[in-house]
Length: 136
Image 1: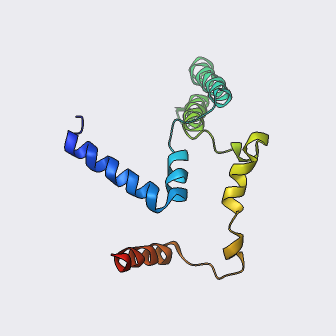
Image 2: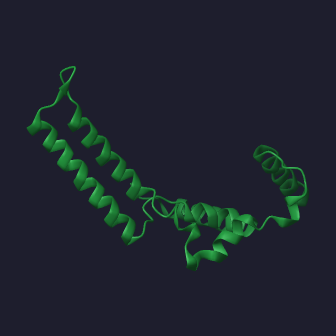
Image 3: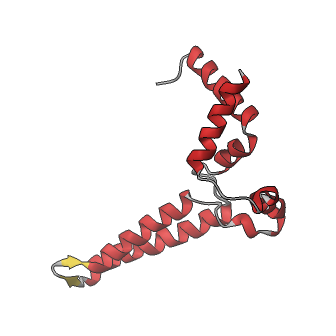
């Protein structure tokens, strides 16, 4: 069911407010979406999936059973499942790539706070919440 015009406008306002208030957080959330994987990673996942499929069918043909359960077929299924996760969670290993050196510095670029005490995530969010109401 699609969103109404009012709901779409509200969603855009929330998104714009998020970008205006904390662009670093907004960009990190945007980068972590599922389905953003490179062509090479998809090709690797497809090859692993085919290997799992071969194990699944081959396990039924060979008929190796442990406790009455076709164990090779189970391993094949797990390999296929892992390949699907590998394809969906793509992009995680690209931080060390030569072209992405500026992105890697963005994560480690916390030098102003490096000497200070580390605070919990909940404390930082509470501070942001309090600052928002103090500004109004």
